[in-house]
Image (cartoon, rainbow, N blue to C red):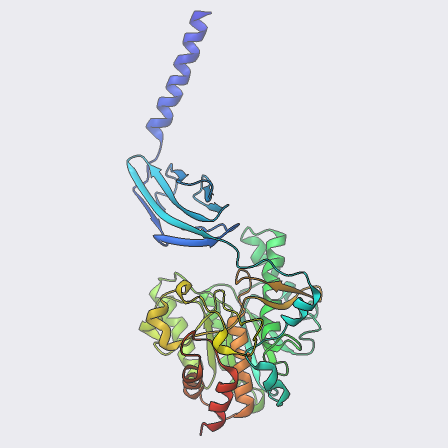
Length: 414
């Protein structure tokens, strides 16, 4: 019996030594940000690169009551506060600070509140009463595509009859997204984001330009987005002036694109579009911003919302300037638009109220509708004139767009 026990102990010891000997230690662990924040329930993925990829890494959180972390370095926010997420591999150690903030507010359940939140605010409905609804203005949406590329499935009473066409340029519908390992529910959620954005611009009761038209281009990734912009420019050449797209709404794709050739191609497309008379509204900061297009508008909106007690008072609006990427460096061409505390359209012909900015990236769609009203008021506006009017009339303190002041400015533009 003693021999058997000894043999087992030897095997366990050898196994332990083998695991230690053959473990691959990381030579480098890097994060996207040294400090990051999220809301309770958020799952930020801040791991940029581990070299080699198969390295053995042990993860820990200094305060598990604030956030936990799994074996892949993915944190889960469980409580308000700060914690340090640390990765160890052999003698190598790397960490970053994570701040967890509470949700902004709990979504209301009172139907009257939900209905009131359909109001775009900031004086937009007053402009609608003056007949400024974006009528006759064509807008292109470049972003997530339509489910199965079937336009007949993309229906909602908010934008029924407003979709003038659809082009798939790399979205590839269900097969593409499901092929990236996303679940069916994740696919439907992404598709739902398109409903929100489209309704925020041309929604009959929730949009800023309810009588404008939308042409959609389904893309995934920055190269496909570049192709989408070029497609709009080429398509315009074959259309009458009345049918040409004047505004491109970029869904997103901001972030860490460091491939210089990809960035050059993207900004070349943006610059070409704007030279041809199409305003490109981009949400999120993309590296190369200053280098390739120092005049592009940066549409900010994290947690931006109007005062529900005074929805038309732009000066009382809330904008979380501190949470915007490099805001101080880009404020001269950055502008906020509401994307929180709003009711917008989702699929199944229903609506949803968004208490915070999470999952409701509609600020550039909102702004596109404001510009569409301006183009209705003055169809001969140039892209530089639009940009100047937006920057000149935004609130000087909170940098929120001021639709009535913008309209007055473009009416006076020659």
